[in-house]
Length: 95
Image 1 (cartoon, rainbow, N blue to C red):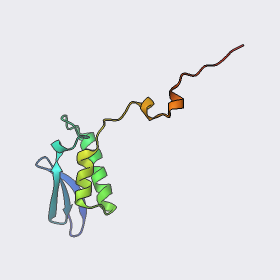
Image 2 (spheres, helix red, strand yellow):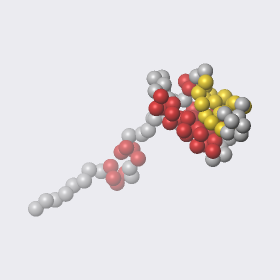
Image 3 (cartoon, rainbow, N blue to C red):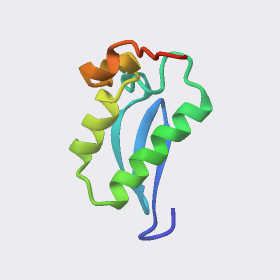
Image 4 (cartoon, rainbow, N blue to C red):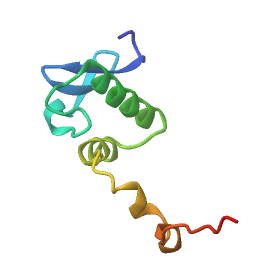
């Protein structure tokens, strides 16, 4: 990278923050649940974009690392997110 320019890359299986010739290793790709075992290029690209966005917004390296290591795809079932009233079956009278 040119002097003062920043970027997020992958080297030796790790996510790297680069500024010019300086680099900071964040974490291993294997520690990021959103990437998974398959390590699909599109999943890696999504994580790198999220890391770059967080870095551009001024988040600390620790916060970025915690975010990528704890973000997962274990979402509750959609109905679990609805209020109790919405879970009751609808009844309609048709004449």
